[in-house]
Structure formats: structure tokens, C-alpha cells
Amino acid sequence: QVQLEESGGGSAQSGDSLRLPCAAPGCTLSISAMGWFRQGLGKEREFVAAISGNGTRTYYTDSVKGRFTISRDSAKNTVYLQMNTLKPEDTAVYYCAAEAYNKFTYAYQAAGRYDYWGQGTQVTVSS
Image (cartoon, rainbow, N blue to C red):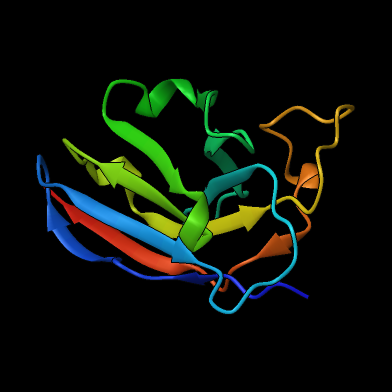
């Protein structure tokens, strides 16, 4: 089992930046793609961003393109979500997810692709 630990959440003003790291400390199992999802109050969980196992491909939902950047340090089993120009609609609990092996039949945007999930970190953006 892989435990994912998100951090870096908190309160921000519109236009501010936050960086969310997600680590898998002590992980000895392989991890392929990693991603971020979010769930606002009263809303369904939605895809935010993903990065392929080798880090060469990234994917974003339209609402964060140009503002958010996903990256990874595979040696540290850590993925980062750099969030710039934050908006109130970015307010949500952000969840980190990791795939145990490359599931070719799933899109990177699909929650079902991911085997491991973090507990989530709250991001609150005020206007």
C-alpha cells in the first residue's frame, strides 16, 4: 500500500499563488502517473491535472490551463501542483492520486486510473 501525503494548502487571496506538494514517504512500490483532483463544497470530485510516469506528458482541465503547473520528482516520489493566479472558484479540497502501473485503457483524467489517494488538503481562495 502507498500512502500519499498532501501539504501546502491554506487560505489565499485572489491572484495569489500556492504550491501543493504530495509525497509518498518510504514508498518502495512503483508509481506511474500521478494526478490532482479537487472537490468543492457540494460538488463532485473533478480532475485538475496529471503527469505521466516519465514526466514527459501533462494534462490539465480547461479551467486551470495557463495558471496551474504539475511537475514531479520521481527520485523523491513527489508530485507538485503550482497554482498561480488563484480564483475563488479554485476553493476546494485537493486530492493527490497515484497509479501503480500504466493503465492504458484509462484516460489520465479518469479517477478510476489511480490506485492510491491522499487525504486531501483544503485550499480556500477569497476575493
